[in-house]
Image (cartoon, helix red, strand yellow):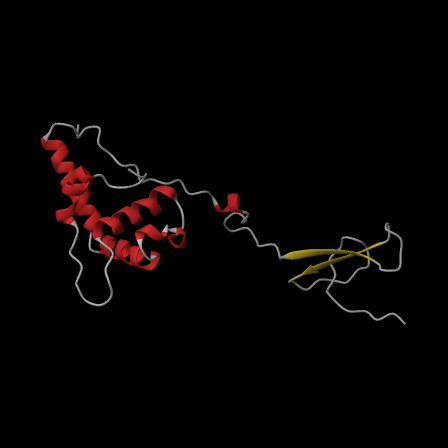
Length: 166
């Protein structure tokens, strides 16, 4: 048995809950193969395009996944399996939970300023060595989005401009 595949016992439980595909158009990928392809992508974390060919065209598997998600097929499977486990006494409902919470990082953690603080203009620092000068001879130019006074000192804000030397 390959990894991420549904066993025969598991498929017997799930098969009645999978909607039957219409028999029109091209040859259909069997529902069990579709489910195995979906599980492969979800468990491996790979993009849809990296789905192995043994599961069929990735577009078909992705389409079925999105369709089943919209029509709540996965919710029906989860509910049916929970009911079966509960009937067999395998679920303690006081402990059953799925943690779907997330912690959002602050805007400052992503490099943004604090709320209400003025935004600093985007700056780009350019340093270039003159083609005909020594390695220690460097020109500095900082380009900003906001207007500022021109200075010729290294590292200070200047407007981007072209200068021709004769």
